[in-house]
Amino acid sequence: MNLDMSGTIVAKSDQINASDITQPTIITITDVKVKKGDDQPVWITVAEYPKSYFKPGLTVRRILAHLWGNDGAAYIGRQIEIYNDSTVKWGGQEVGGIRVSRMSHIDKPEVLTLPEGRGKWKDFYVEPLPQQPQQQPQQSPQAAPDWDEAISDCQGNTDDLRALWTQAQETGAPQEVLNKIQAVAQQGDQQ
Image (cartoon, rainbow, N blue to C red; front, side):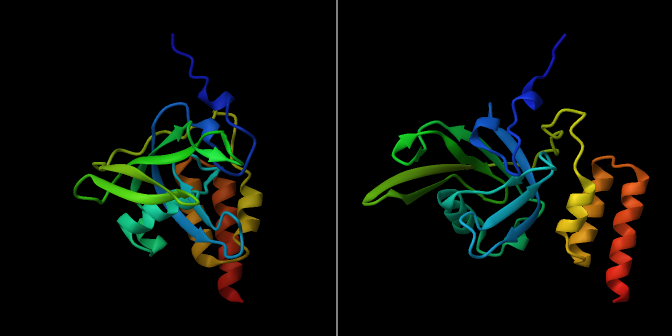
C-alpha cells in the first residue's frame, strides 16, 4: 500500500515554495497575472496546485520571457517542469529555489547564460517538454480551496470569474460554489 504524504509537507502559503517540490513536477499554466510594484510581480495559477500561485523568481521569469516571449497570456495551457535547486542562494546562503528544467512549446534544447549575481553568470539548460496529461493536484483531499476568498479576489472582474468557474468545475467544487461564482459574474455584467 502506497500512502502519498506529499500533501502533508506543503507550507501554509499562497505560493508554491521550493521546499514543497520533492521531485521534478510538471505544472500546467491556467492563468498569469502581473502585479506591478510587488517584489514577486508575476503570479501564475497552475492546475496542479489550485490553491497556490507559482511566483517565479527573476531568473525563471527571464527564462520564460526568453523562450516564450513577454506575453504572459500566451503561456496559458503551456507546461513547465519545475524542480527544487538546492544551490539557489538567498541572502548569501544556499536555501534552495524553484528552477525550470523542461518547457513545452520549444523545439530544441536551449542554453541561456543569465546573471546569477553581481558579476556572476551561469548557464541554464532547458529541454523541450512534450505536452503531458495534466497531473493531479498536489494537495491532500481535505484541502479544498477557499472559494469565497477566490471569488472576492476576482473583484467582480468577469474574465477572472469565468476562469475561476472553470477551475472550480475542473477541481470538482460543489454546485453551490459554481452557482455563486456565476451569480457574482452576472452582477458584474449588469453594472
